Image (tube, rainbow, N blue to C red; front, side):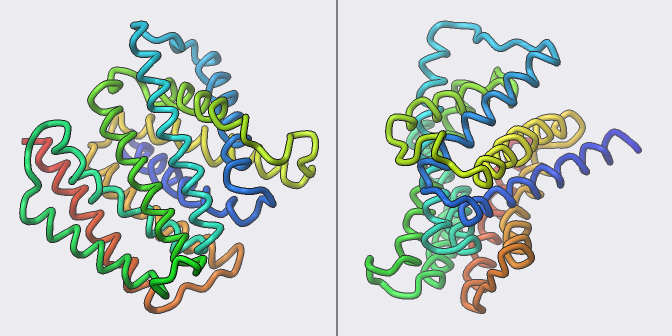
Length: 288
């Protein structure tokens, strides 16, 4: 197998596993915060073991980088809690689609860092995403779980965008596994004081699922994603990542028999199309 083909395979497996992560919001019988704490702890240990086996650096270059690692970990922790909470309230498909508004949110947040203005095409993409989100919401009432799930998914997208922008500007000198080690460690430590179910009360079934979520669906895809970038462009990686909602939806249909409505599919198509367009635009601009 050619290096490019192998990297493409790694990338698709990584995106498939990323999409499958959402299933654990429904499969594990814990609240979103507890799932996040235990999942990030397991993932952090797995990534540390991987870095040690590969004899890759764990320490950061500068003392100030540890402060940035803490800030990134806080953003990731909030992102993951709201990500799982959105799935639990609205369902896998709707929660994931609401979260996938993050590429367009990123386009509007980046000008705050580089003092530029969004372009007309970005405003159009935002309008498409807003329409798509509107189609996902069954009612304007905050008393509806699906509506709250959509809002929570958008909040998750916001913090994920903050994390990505901050990482790109201040932490891009570090590799993916090294970065994720600190982010999972900080997220777990930050949230562990708020857990409702201590680890000794977690059922064996949920512990097994947490191990699978942390090792196979968190540490593994991040490592595969980082490895795939050795022979693939950022544009290819970004566009294939747009398949995540599709993979997540298909897995939800197969494993937990969740059936999205026609309106959800239409709204999701609008959101993912806008996300793919913005991803393509950003990577095309970066190549110039």
